[in-house]
Image (tube, rainbow, N blue to C red; front, top):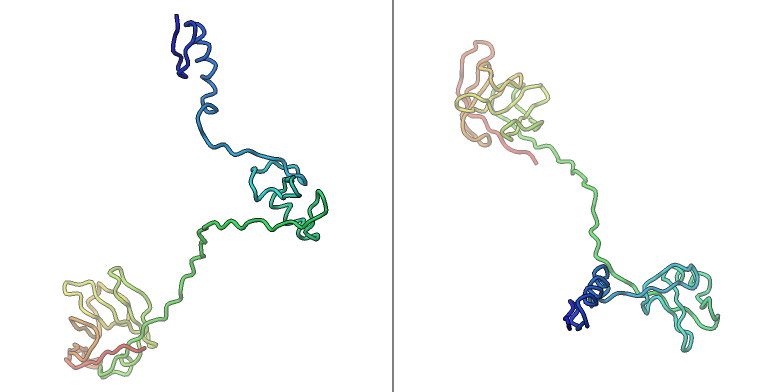
Length: 208
């Protein structure tokens, strides 16, 4: 009885076919047609290196295996072939590799924003205000050298407030206005001596 084995060749019997299949069962990788790179031994350091043209130097009709590291060492000592001492060693071929360079994250120091307030009628309120922080809604909070704060309140209307302390929920304040912060607009300012509210135009501008 002639049986066709798994490899395609015919066997004389079932038993011989099983033997052939068992013989190639654990060696399937070597049976596939793959390009396997051969290795050679460096003539200087005796390390196994890929059999490539860059890893060999030709001395006439004979090739001497020499790895790239040993080539660089020989170039530093005169650049003469270590096997025959009759010719120079060519430089190893450059192999460019795209590498991702990670730059350290440097946090840029942001210059503080400044605004200028004029027209409140009180020296302690007028002048330059520096942005010191952002509130939970990412809105700027300002303060002047006298310790007065300018910020957005957390009340029903979210007014702009001029106060001695940074207290968005308090009802005690020295001045308030609605809408946008910048520009010449009406502010309600409390009179310090009498405690009554007075409407006046206050000009707020940015400072570069």
